[in-house]
Length: 157
Image 1 (cartoon, rainbow, N blue to C red):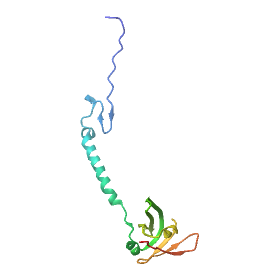
Image 2 (cartoon, helix red, strand yellow):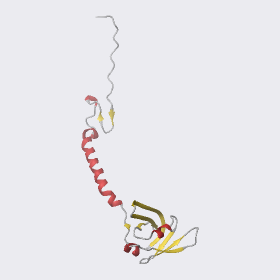
Image 3 (cartoon, one colour):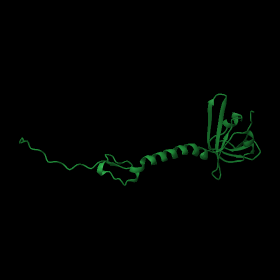
C-alpha cells in the first residue's frame, strides 16, 4: 500500500424530487406513496382527453347567433349602441359587414349585413346609438357630432 492520503467518504446526496414526477432517480429515496408519481400516465391521458373534448364542444356552446338573413334582420328590434364594426373580406365577391350591437340590458346582437347595401354600413360609427323597431328597415341613429338621422337598410338581393 502506498502512503497517499485518501479523502474521507461523503454521505450520498438525496435524489432530486420534482412535483408530479416523484423521485427522478428512483431507488430507496423515491416516495412510493406519491399519488401523482404512481398514476401520472393515466392522469395525463385523462387530462389530454378532456382537453380534446373541450376543443370540440366549447366553441359551439360559447358561439353567439349571427343574424344575416334579410327576414331575420327585418324582424329584429335594436335598442342599444354599436360596440364593434368590422368587415370580413376573404373573397372579393363575398364581403361580410358585421355590427355588434349591445342592448340596454347587456345583450349582444351580431348582425351580418352581407346582403345589404354597404352605404348603410359606411354611415354608422362605433359609439353611436341605434334604435330599430321590429318589422321595419328604418334605423334611427343618434350621433354625437352630427344631428340625429334615420337611415334605411336596403337589401341588394
